[in-house]
Image 1 (tube, rainbow over the protein chains, first blue to last red):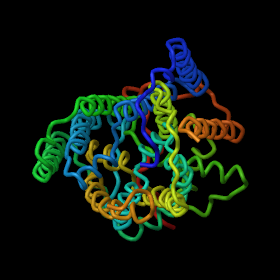
Image 2: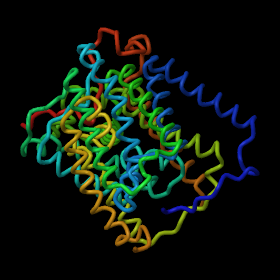
Image 3: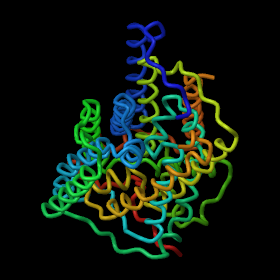
Length: 376
Length: 58
C-alpha cells in the first residue's frame, strides 16, 4: 500500500456536534440536488453515497479479494462478491422480465476487444490496487495513488469510448442474455460453480466470511437492487468518468463529431445536459463523497501519505489511462460488466470475469517491478 | 502531506467539475425531470451505461 494505516485516534475523531453538522450538510446536498435536478437525481446520489459508505465503511472492494485469492488462496472476499451478485440476480432477473422497457440490464456483446480490454483492465487494476469503484472510493478516502489515477482513468475512459465502435467492429457476437427463470437458474448455477472452484482452490477456513463481509455484501446487494429500480439501469461506473472529460473537451471548443460513440444522439445529448442528470456520474460522485465521509467519521484521514519512487508515479498515470481505456473496450469494469453484467444475465459478464481474473495474475507480478511495493 | 489533504483536493476537484458543468450545460428543469422511481413509471430507460453496445462503426 502507499500509505501508512493507523488506528482511529479518539483524540482526533470528530465530536458529536461535528458529526451531526456533517450529516445535516450531506442531507442538504442531496436535497438540493433533488430540488435542482429532480427527485430521481437526488435518490441516485443518495444510493451512490450508500455505495461509498458501504465499500469504505466495511473496507470491502473487488481488487483486494482477487489479489488475496491469487496470492494467499483466501477465497472469502471473492465468495462475498459472488453471494452479492447472486442476491442481486434473484431480484434483477425477475424484475427485468416483468418490467418491459422501464428497466434495462447491463447487456453487452462478447467480442475480441471486449475480452482483451477485460484482460488489460484486470492487470491495471492490480497495479494501482483499485478498479472502477475502488479508484473512486480510495481517492475519496485520501489514497494518493487513486487520487492521481482518477483523472487519467477519466481521460482513458473518454478516449476508449471515442474509439469504441471501431474496436467493437473487429469482431463481436450478438448480445447473449440469460433471461427469465431458466436464465436465473443458469446464473445461480454458474455462481455456485465458481464459488465451488474458489473453495476447492482456497486455503482451509477461507469459506468463513468475516462479519464485515456479510455486512458489505448485503448492503451492496440491497443498494444495487434499489439502483436498478430507481434509475432503471444497473450500477455502472465508467460511462460517467468518460462523460466528464467529453464535457470538458466540448467546453474547450473541441469537436466530437469524429467519434461514432460521442456523436450518437443519446451521448451527444448527455454531453450537453447537466452531470446531475447522468446516473453514473451521480453514483460516481456519491462513491467519492460516501468514502470521504466514512474516512473523516472514523478519523482515518490523519495518516501521512507515503513516498514512492518517480517510476511508481509514472506507472500510476499510465495505469490510470489504461484502466479507463480498457474498461470501455471491455464494455464495463468490475461493476458494470462483472457485478451488474452477471447479475442482469449478460453472458459478457462471465467472459469479462475470466479475462480480468487472468489479467490480475499479470498485474500482481508487475506491481513490485514498477516500484509500487516491495518485491517478494 | 496527509490523507486529509488528498481528500480535500479530490473534493475541490469535484466542486470545480460541477461548477464548470453548471456553466456549460443546458439549464436544469426539475419539473421536466423523470419520476423518482423508474419501475412503474411507464417510461423507457434511456441513461448511458458502460455496458451499452456502441453504435456500429461508419
